[in-house]
Length: 109
Image (cartoon, rainbow, N blue to C red; front, side):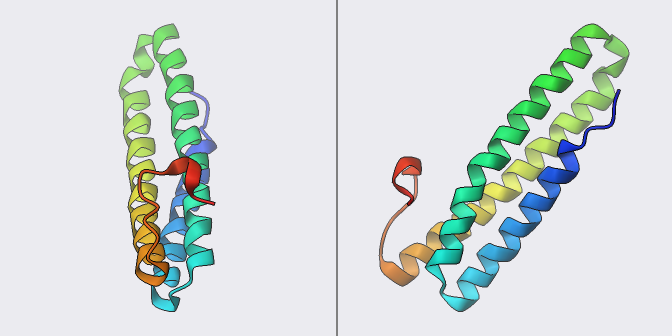
């Protein structure tokens, strides 16, 4: 299998999201919290892209199934880390401005 550059990219984005969500909490910064929410869709898109690419490899060559499944799980867990950071950011926005932005992806701006 070719090296997947999107896994390290996902890890970097997830790390930034966690750091920014915690900074937003400490500083009570709704702008920074909003930035975390805005990054979540990109992380979700990378997970989907990785899944599709790895599925293609698995269909073409069954010997790639085990390593591809491992990478799919890694991408899934990185996406979940981003979801946790998003939850913290949503809580910051609620705590500071009393706006509930959970489950309102289109209304986050």
